[in-house]
Image 1 (cartoon, rainbow, N blue to C red):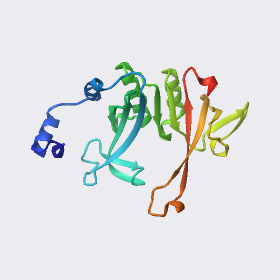
Image 2 (image 1 turned 60 degrees about the vertical axis):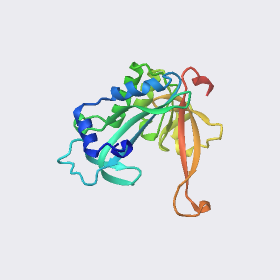
Image 3 (image 1 turned 135 degrees about the horizontal axis):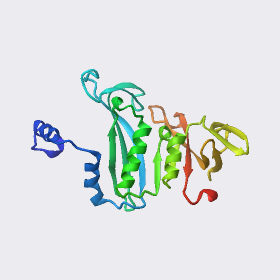
Image 4 (image 1 turned 90 degrees about the horizontal axis):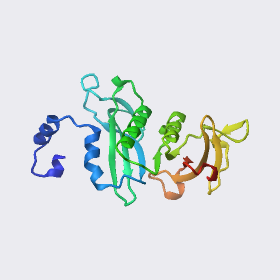
Amino acid sequence: MAEILGDVSHDSVNRFLLRERYEPKDLFNIVEKIINLVGGILSVDDTVIEKIYSDPKNAELISYFWSGKAHKTIIGLNLITLYYSDINGNSVPINYRIYDKKEGKTKNDYFREMVSEIISWGVKPRIITGDSWYSGVENLKFLKNQKLGFLFGIEKNRTVSNEPHKYCQVSTLVIPESGLRTHLKEFGFIKLFRKDFKKEDSRPEAERLRLRTIFCMFQMRKESRI
């Protein structure tokens, strides 16, 4: 922040931040003035802010977390954020949590808590998106009960059924480009989509590993048509 503000010193910024206790609602009160609260896309994501020189024994909220970017466990802060993109193209963070192991909550607990909050603040998203970490049955049922549609990544070992009482893993399905309507065990009907990505690395493009991601989609009031 000191770098952005130019003439303001790093110590001044620290003193300012320590002077007040900021809450997620404070962030929302700022950004709500520049976004349309109805009909946008709400996305959940989490990241680990690396703190390699901190000792988890002496620093509150700092611990060991798995980093998808580093592909290993690192020391840092785990920040879970809800981003909102409105119908006019404005994209802002509107809620957040810093993972605190002492609270005994999971990232999914924080996710449901934050979604409930932004709904109470007047946000009415059209759809919720996120990676497979957030596509557990409890989250999906929660969103359905909130009358919210969703598009999440889904693990390939999830169990679905195309015929009554006959289940198989998502990885065994042939999913056409138009998607595949199927029944997700313990949830209900969803639509699966498949997307192939090329892994970014130093190899020539033609030799790069092709990664396959499967998404599950659910839309309120359109369930029988997907």
